[in-house]
Image (tube, rainbow, N blue to C red):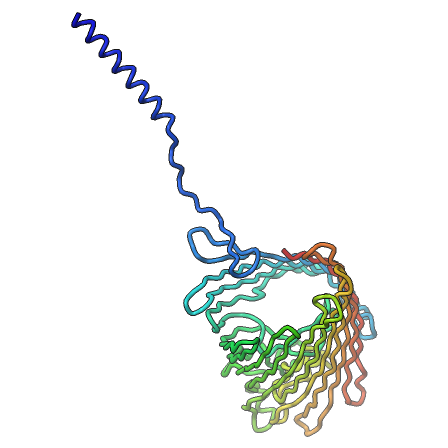
Length: 401
């Protein structure tokens, strides 16, 4: 009898153990923790938190392909067998924008890289790269002196206004109601204008003092306006400095003012702008078109000659009309003049005007197809030097994402 009880107990224990094991196998297993990507809406659309951090990141890009028919006028590329009659460009951009909220303000790091190939020649560069924290910004980005840099889609001819990018450090104070003030130190080399020989070699000395730039800005519902000022060191190289007779070691200066007005009677995005610049010994601040004028492949425009600085001005205006929800029309125009002195005591006046217009169709947000035409005329009051005319055409297809 006792043997039967023992056998019964052993069988019951085995059954219980089997049941317990089966139940344990059916229990759910806790999953490994996973960092899901979270949407960050603190800085606008398309930002996401980097997993494991409180930093928001936006990744973007752009692909552009365009075909430009170069200058078809007398003296242009089409009249020289050694020059390219067209430029066929494909360019890609990659953007990274990282932002973190701090007690002092948003800590931001921005990088824009670009790679391109034109007529079989490829290249790449840093398009922009900077760190900003609160009101402090340091890195490679557009000059704080710049105001408006055009409306047209392609811009086949250069119009004259301040448009430069360089290394810099700047501080911007915001006062509310859209008012702000900026003070900056900017790399001088991006603004040097000097004589160049037929090989393109400049006659400027080494770096000593960066440019000092200041700007006052207002941006409100009606549009925006800005006042800009700059100091620029004029520092020719040793050979040219002696040629100037007595040498030049001075500071040039520049001022600018502009206003951009939204057009309430037209579709959203339509606007018109006006701006003007004056410079003495800092000619880059009035524009890149007139300062690039050459005579017999020699650059005659320079910040200083004959121991003194040279001066000039530019005026420009442009309009953008969002004609329909998918079609935009744009027109830019500029006029610039520089008075130059020379070592022999003579002088000359350079004049340049330019106009550029475009139409763009954007059937899908971020995707555009456009056409552009531009004309410019450059002249100088030197005997035997003819006017130089430019007429160019271009088409572009572009996707931004």
